[in-house]
Structures are given as structure tokens and as C-alpha cells.
Length: 282
Image 1 (tube, rainbow, N blue to C red):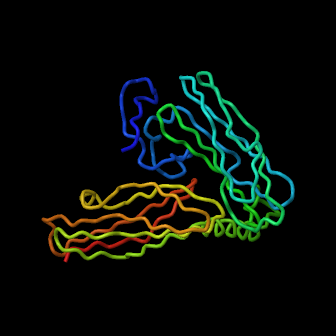
Image 2 (cartoon, rainbow, N blue to C red):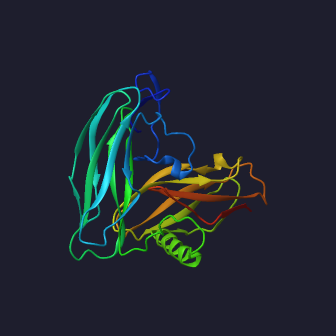
Image 3 (cartoon, rainbow, N blue to C red):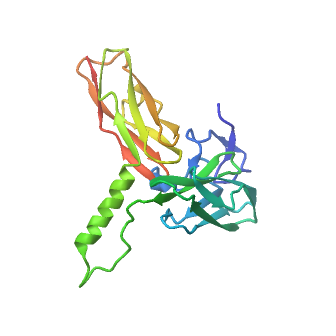
């Protein structure tokens, strides 16, 4: 079992207890995953990297800003940094922070690709452990030889809408290709009381590790028959992994009963949904 952490209204000294989030590290930009409220503990200390994407096509270093901020209680700790092979962060970390109540601290980092670094997409990450005992992580995409999104424009006379749309589509396609998500079991046919499994394969095209969370979505009434409802995952650079979700038909299930399940895959502010898996009682 995971460590016990203190919660309440985001106050680690409240004395109330909660189980930590099942997927660790917790992504700092959790709202980008469409998960609703803040993670357990209310994230009393947050870590953020900006901008969300930097380009390393030329020989010069790119600037990244790292910010740590806290709530009403003072916070201190260490930021651990990671970058893809062949990309150097300066300073390399770990970095120490010491915050007064409602305080923040910023660091200026640079990222630079080694000479001859091949084209690709990878993530630099910054990770802390907050007062609730959970790991909090943020990321920035480091892109080499990748299509860049078009700059913001004010549409009007002289605006080339076709060029704008073409560049945006190329950038969207490149992001979509970072990870391929495939359902290896598109349907399950079970007898009452029988167990089966939904398998989802993740194939990463990134040149760095990715970490995220996968949630099983299904209609109300089926929840007690499938799980886990969510789980964390980590995939090494260019590697693959298979996520597994167990389904056990209720002993009282009726022949002809059927429902669907979808797996929601989240990593570093990205969202992907699988094709629906049909579960049928035979």
C-alpha cells in the first residue's frame, strides 16, 4: 500500500487522512487531463514549467522557466530534473527551494541539444514531493525537426487561412503520433461469473520516457464488474507497454446483457481515448 498522507482543505496539518492518488507522480497540470477537482491533498505545493513546448532546431540553448509555489503553509524541498538523452539541462539539478507562506520561487533553465541530435519529440520534467507525500511533476516538450504550430494571428485582410490551417494540422498530427494507443481486445463475451480482460497497448514514439494515467470508463451499473478504475503507467523512450483491466461478469448477469468500456489515456497534458470495447453476456 502507498504512504498515508494528510489532507483536508489542502492543509497537511489538518489531521484528516486520505489515500494518495493511485497514479504517481501526479501531473501538475491536472486540469489538462479533464479530471475535475485538484488531486487528493489539494496540491499544497505546485511545480510548473513554461512554455509548454520549446524548439531545439538551432545550435543555441532554449530558455525554460521553472516555478515552485505554495499555499498558506511554508514549503521547502528539492526539484529533480530529467531530460531526454542527448539534451542537456543547465543547471542540471537537483535544485533546492524554500518558500514562505503563499510564496513562490523561480529558476531559469536552459535546454540544449547535442550536436547531431536526431529529429524527435521528448519531454523534460521537473518533479517535487509535496507536504502530503505525493510526487508532483510537470513537463515541457522538447522538439527537434518537428512542425511548429502557427503563431497567433488576428484574422483579417491578408491572412492566409489555408497556410494557417495547414501548419496547425501538421503540428496536431505530430502530437497525435507521439503515442499510439491500440485496444488488443475489441470485445469480450462472458458467461455469468466468468472473468475476462481488456488490454490496451501503448507504443511510444517519444525520445524520452512518458508517465501518465489510464482510466477505465464504463456505464453506471458496470463499475463493480471492472477494474482497476485507474492506474499509473510509465513507458521508456521508444518502448511499448500493455495496460490491463479485469472484467468479471456478475453471477446474476443475464444472457444478452451488454455494455461498453473505454480507456482514457493521459500523459503530460495529452488525452487519448480508445475505441469502445463491447462486453456481452452470453
